[in-house]
Length: 278
Image (cartoon, rainbow, N blue to C red):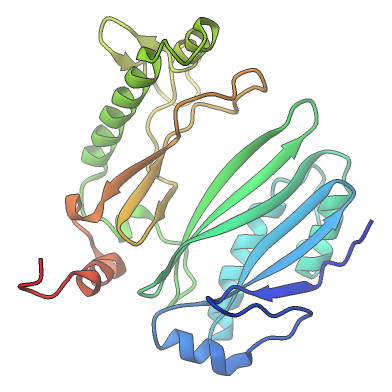
């Protein structure tokens, strides 16, 4: 099987270049002036694994290196056997792909690349006893390369955001379980058990982390940014192959319903229509 890991392509609208050819520092500097990163993919395959991993180029090479290292670390950390982190990314992916189990590849989506903010969605594919996918969301400050916590971008209190998220989860699970025309009784029963659904209260049985008889609490540590909304996640575990139909784990809160802070506040202001045009 082809193990060429050094195929790279630029992910710039209207531009598709292969074989390591790129637009160089001039393109990175031009994009930096607009608050964007130059994105390219490191693509490769080995055994049954297929990898497509995002990397960035910026005018500040140290900042780009910090972001690229963080992205690679997140993916390689899922390898069954430890991989040499000092090796090139291409070699790290090759070593991960050669392992018999269980990381079967990655793909990614750019959720936001503007206003000096970069939000990425990584989808990791696993195989072995069963096939499943897991998503990871990363948000970076393109000025510093730092991965940003939600508190750096949203001024709403964590307690308030957690309460709003839990209310949204309750509504979604209630709607899911009420749809008896499209879903089998066994699926509904499995989902109700997974979420520790309290039917009389119409709410998920949230509890402390790792509590044996409760659903995990809403967690604000992992999130994504889109051009118009904050995306929060709620996971209850890895769905089994017999329970592929579960409530969507992504919850959308428009920026208009949040107190944006930091770089997000600047982005929201810059994206607002001029006065008198609404």
